[in-house]
Image 1 (tube, rainbow, N blue to C red):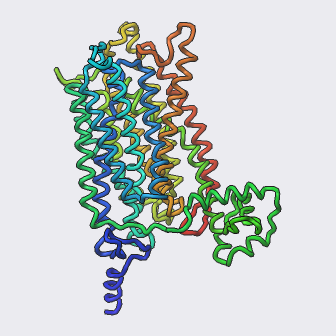
Image 2: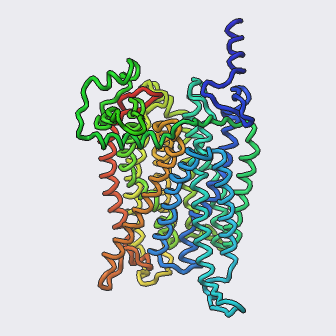
Image 3: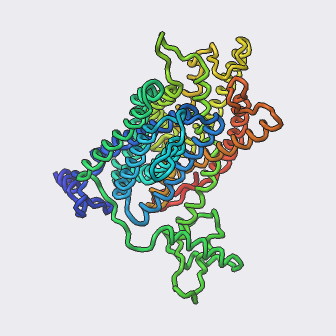
Length: 570
């Protein structure tokens, strides 16, 4: 009976982690957070992703269609925009973690997002670029071509700015609804990342094919307007869940950014000094001594802060270990960038391949090439529950780990699968080019090669499976391994892998275009895709992926996990 009373009492007590509810009062476990709040936030993320991928998924078709850009230029523009959209979350996360908090950052970012989507819809309403001509107005010259393009790109980058605050904060805010000090909620948080990705992709799968069809066959105005409406609904849903949310109490003390930055600065200043073996002993008790890691020992010199410094502040061992935890992420981040490059191809050259292939399902209906991204999504929808409900319990019985395999093992598995994705893409492209030659279609840039678009299913499906491992693993890894105050920044680092990967993809395309297209030769990415050599590019990516995977394994083996203040070998 006493045990029962204890359980009831615990449910009524304030949360161990010190969260508060929307009124600022200590949050009660039985009335806030957990899945009741997480489903609100997951629903918001599904709507936001529908809006984002509703733009990105078919962007190359809009650029090469209504805006009349070349294939290479359009691919570069998509990569630059996608890269910017994935890097800006670093700024959004900084604003959230240092000033506004996640909740208010999400609201502000959503409003900017809606503004960008609204202006994007307006830009599609302007006179078509094919009818561009300058008209004399009473006060100025108005050129429909220039105004449409300028407004389009301003709107596009407003969407990127909106996403910068929305994306890292929503997922971190969702994970914040689970108390990591409570055993049941701590286990549920690990499942949260799996179901987060599953529901997000499932929602996109159910809507994007329809949205892409509308854009390709009916109206770009409607195709851009629907994401705007969806985003307005997302903000409304998010606000409706306010009374159920848990809010972390922001520490009014020194910012984590300042603490970590000071460790690096002081360590550099003291690089010529000698660190005695007794320094750490003097700085910590037995518990902290056990937490001290042997990696990056040069940062231990931050403990030698000059006693005569003007501010009188010193770096504690816990601050040094905090800086080490952040520094340990750098090699993992860098070695996953090649995966980001491969990721960029799903929204560019995979679509261009499909556009030149036979897409007729039945007379009068051609499947939009961008709709094959739903195969990628379908793979995620099918494999995610299998991973969470079958793979994890089975591997747990062998390894004894709560998640079955470690986060880095999960990430590495996905990177390994991505190698086969680009190999398959190269083989399919070789087959497509041979078919074009057999039917003498090489010199016709608008020819439809008599080869079914379903040949692209394996590369889309394989990459979808790889995302279940790598993308979800990266999300959990960067959320879990950064200091608590920097978790929005941690998820922004995960997003930056896709962003930098997109920039690197754009750089590779530009460099290869200049090298292979000089002296009048057809480049690998010439506008006539039947003369291009995307197969060569895919083989290059497969080689880079092998190198990246090898380096990832090397650094992953020596990685030291930071778990609730206890340093453990990976």
